[in-house]
Structures are given as C-alpha cells and as structure tokens.
Image 1 (cartoon, rainbow, N blue to C red):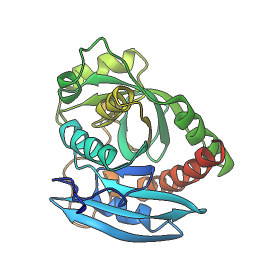
Image 2 (tube, rainbow, N blue to C red):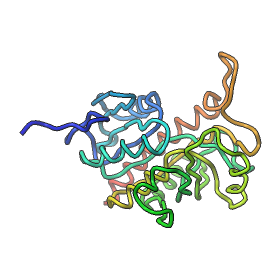
Image 3 (cartoon, rainbow, N blue to C red):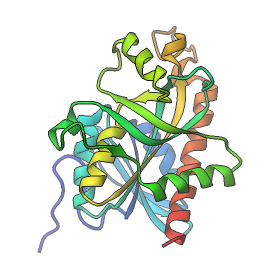
Length: 250
C-alpha cells in the first residue's frame, strides 16, 4: 500500500513523532529543530514546515501552524492523523498583567475561547484546558533549567488588532496574557484524547502600550527585542526538556 500524505502539512504516517512542538513561525520551527540531537526536514508546503528527529533518545517533531486558530486547527488535525499524540505550543504572547514583563515566560493552564474555530467543534461551554501532565512537565523543566515562569489562564483571540477595552476586561479577570492559537489546540486535544500544553515568550503588554507595532528598519522592538529572542530560545529549551520528562514518566 502506498504511503498517503495529508493535504496541507504534506506528512504521512511515520513522518512525525509522538511528541510535536508547534509554533506559528516557520523560522522558529527551524530554531527549535536546531535544538534536537538529530533532525531532518520532512516537509514544507504552504508555509507549513515540519522537522523530525530525536532529543535525548526520544522521537520528536517540530511543525509550524501559521497565525491563528483556523490555521492551527488544520495542522493539529493532520498531525494527529499521522501519529502525533502530544503537542506543545512554543509561541509568543502579549501580557495582560502589569507584573509580567517583556522577556518573561508564561505557561498556560487553560485558554479563554475568544476564537471562532473552536466553536465549529463544540459550544462555548466546553472548556479549553491544557493537559495536566504536559503543564507540570513544562513547569518542572523550567525549574530544572533555572527559569522562572508565570502560569495560569490565557486569552486566545482571532484579532491581533482587536479591542483594547476588551483586553482590559480580561486583565481584570486575572487572565495572564493574550495569544492566538491555544484555545483550539486544547479543545482539539481534549476531543481527540490527545495531550497539549502551551509555553509562551512575552513580547509586550498591550495594556501598558508596549508591544508589537510599527518600527524603523533595523529597530529591535516587539518580538525582535533581545529579551524576547532570549525568552524564545529559553522556552524552546524548556519544551524539549519537557518532552524528555514526559517520556521518562510513562
């Protein structure tokens, strides 16, 4: 029987590992794959890129999801069809609390479903909750590597250029930060009996007027800020360490 591949990620059974680190940015996926002990590019199509390899003897893959829940849902659906079981989103986020600073790291325990894609699967009453074991592994991996993390609920929104007043409401509810993919990832994982977690590097704080926006060529602001770039590398290291912990705990 000929190998069959998925229509968007262009991967088939045997191309991806049980553990997959997913990130919106294809370039970040390349950076994550560079942390593996060994890896090779499996596929690249329509902005979706996938690498597979090993870390500490454990099979692991890294895939890009693009921006937003609709795109992320496609990737998670197709990765699950070819064997992925544990997903860790390695992304960026805008803080909604004043004590969370640029370059900090957030581990999400759950996500507010302010997106549209997850509503195509289940009603809003269904919770988008991170897997407990994956979340604990991320926190423990961070401690092992000497990194402090904030952990708690995040807001998933479809609109990057959304309503600031709405963000202030969620800030008052003690939601830690806003991002664009975790709610559908958590929802799909729950529905398909998979495991998923999220770790995020803070690239600004829209409540304080600090974050991504227009900038001069060569200016290092938002995600390009050195503090954020360092945090992205740290969160990728934490995620790979968490994979090893999860495999050892089986």
